[in-house]
Length: 60
Image 1 (cartoon, rainbow, N blue to C red):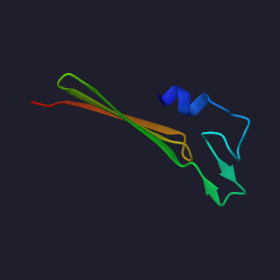
Image 2: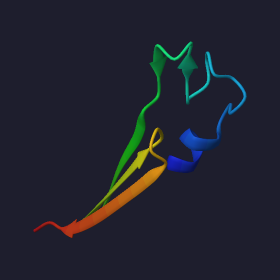
Image 3: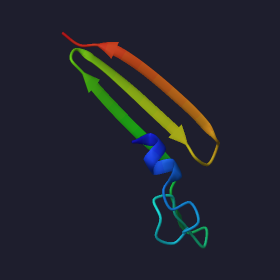
Image 4: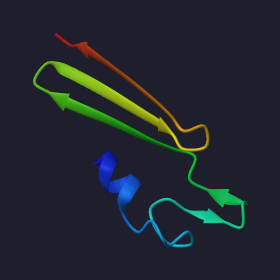
């Protein structure tokens, strides 16, 4: 899903998934949580700073 949000309708800043409407309203980040059995993986992509973070943990 992260790739979908980052790469879909790249050329449409007004209506795409990553928007920038006259520098007033813009997408700032994308966050994703993936749950598989007893593991949770979190992904955060800061679009403005061009940084990515991830972490995962086990749930019981």
